[in-house]
Length: 290
Image (cartoon, rainbow, N blue to C red):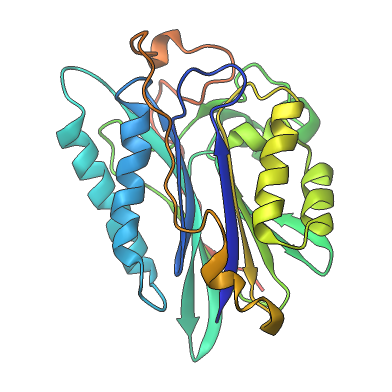
């Protein structure tokens, strides 16, 4: 399966530091949203990208390959961020996988960054947020509309880091010939509704233009957080050249640390992704989606 892709990231209009990192090159496409501030969150997300980069150049990857990347990231993070500092990162993305000779998307997620699929004109969120508000929605105690404005909407229940073994979720999806995937940090989805995401993904045929337009729209809507987007298409014949020429393909971009010191989880400003102070949420059963 050939893919074409595009990516974009921005620190936003409020943040002094971009703690997002991204990776976009076959067979892996991901976004990592770091937590912990200066020399912590940005390191956490970058370490995730470095470990998943070991999959680059392989035609496909397996769930065992991906799971090993999560655990190596957690181990390196524990070794790298010391001095009493606590750091972590969300990681959401897809790898190209193969099953019985067929092409599949292996979707993975930990935290509240997201993976969407656009197919037959319909946008579907594949990943499930690991967050306090998602737990409340699942329990029937909160509606999706209420969750969007809940004061704890940025509090996540799982991440890579923090001393606990990573507990990602996985989904295996047959790859359709017209699939378009969106992988993004919560800086995008906190500013734009699913309807706006769908509209931009439908209007912009080139994946690089789509990624840039998504980030631009989030900045125009407020840009209160770091925002990152990776758009991946199953390449049609006329797009084969895009596989090699996409401007930002494979780039990992993080802003230089600010000079004002750290932002810890305890003094995080409004909109920061922060971990839940209690124990991890219950596990979700991995799914195979048709």
